[in-house]
Amino acid sequence: MHHHVIPLKVYLTIFGSLLFLTIATVGVSYMPTVPIVHLIGALIIAAIKTTLIVMFFMHVRYNSHLIWSFASLGFFFVLLFMVFMMGDYISQYYSLTPATHAVPFDKF
Image (cartoon, rainbow, N blue to C red; front, side, top):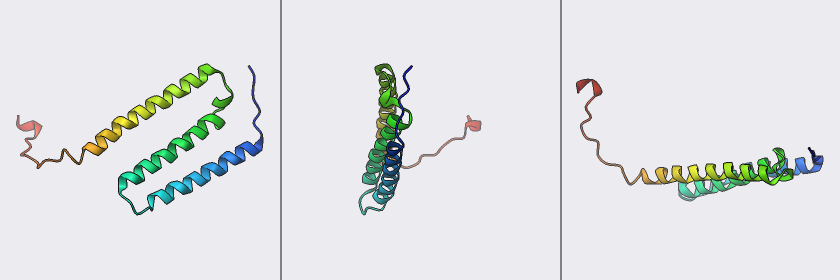
């Protein structure tokens, strides 16, 4: 098995990028916009940070296409779950109804 040696300069560059993106995430949270823009901005920045970590710190960039496929598949499923979760998060404001009389389970 071939082990690719990554120079220290690359690691430091990625570390600096991750610090910058963390500061950018905090900056997005203080923007004077609606909360959904904060959420979408933070998720985009988190996806970029995740890609950097997977590609360089987990050495996926220098591995075979099979490893690429499984890493991409995992990332796709996380993205799919996030889309379903966002659908639930966005729809919760439209399904609020007045509370009805709830009957406790021990009264059935």
